[in-house]
Image 1 (cartoon, rainbow, N blue to C red):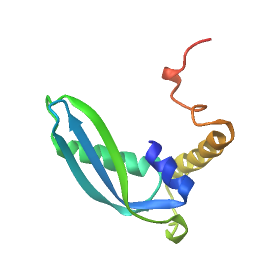
Image 2: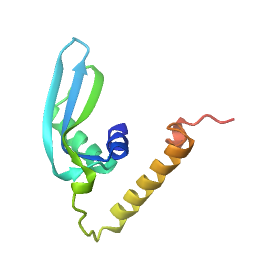
Image 3: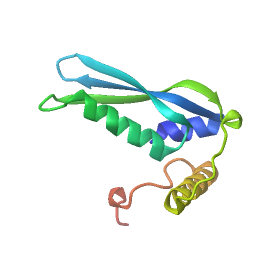
Length: 120
């Protein structure tokens, strides 16, 4: 999710996430939900976005746009880091930081899903 990377690059964390869904008929749906703690991590923001999409009750609507937006932003330096015993989460956060460093050095398109890569 590009939202998390943008927040991390600016040294910010979101306390809430607003998800806007746009439909083919020109209508839109918007919902905001607060995070349990401020975060700029992709997993936290993605999970909340999926939860919000679940509350939309999509059935047969033709979706033409999805726009997540971080709200109620704070300085990442002000966010307390809790000690975690979840080694899988800690590994994902370490990988996220490493991917940010690689993207900063080589460009934003250098890392992505393997399924989207073309064979040379």
